[in-house]
Length: 254
Picture 1: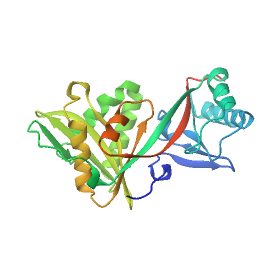
Picture 2 (picture 1 turned 60 degrees about the vertical axis):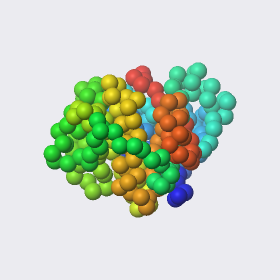
Picture 3 (picture 1 turned 180 degrees about the horizontal axis):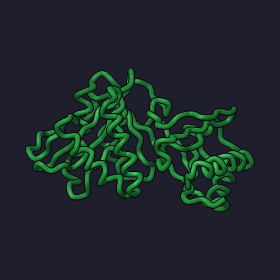
């Protein structure tokens, strides 16, 4: 299995500024998407360094009409107690954790066929089903966000670096994912099954299709460190490769 790090994860947005200690990623086409508008630290900052960078991002986001502040910290590094306390207690950020997982496709468990489940690559024939499914999922973050994401899905559909997968259960659209294809890795992104069809083995069978399509690549994905799906990934023989802390503040005030 290929050794992977967070550098193998696909990032939307463009790098618009870089200093010795941090990189600014900005996506002018999707200002509402936190995951493509943030500061990435190269080294764990001191409290003073964090506050200086925070002030820079505040001013930038005020100019662009953005209402969030997001910071990503160096891979596999833990906060000092002082920095964590300051960010959470004094500055009122929500701090979270992502974990990077990888698997050789041959290690993914064998699955029996289930008649009611149909997994398909997204084509012109089922693209509208896919768009509607994703739109309904993205509505949780508001209509503007969902509309913006629809345009991203349309663009990705035409991009050979992307492959979109849709799942049907008894003929009803039930789940989806995207994969991002690189030289040695394939990243599973945005996997979900709508609530009515969960716990039926649909997510596992969408992943199995990816394993079958790319048997010679390392399959990677990010999991929320607080979320239950990561336990499923471990049971499916994914191996944890690393972790990364994030800090997010929504609707900040100047």
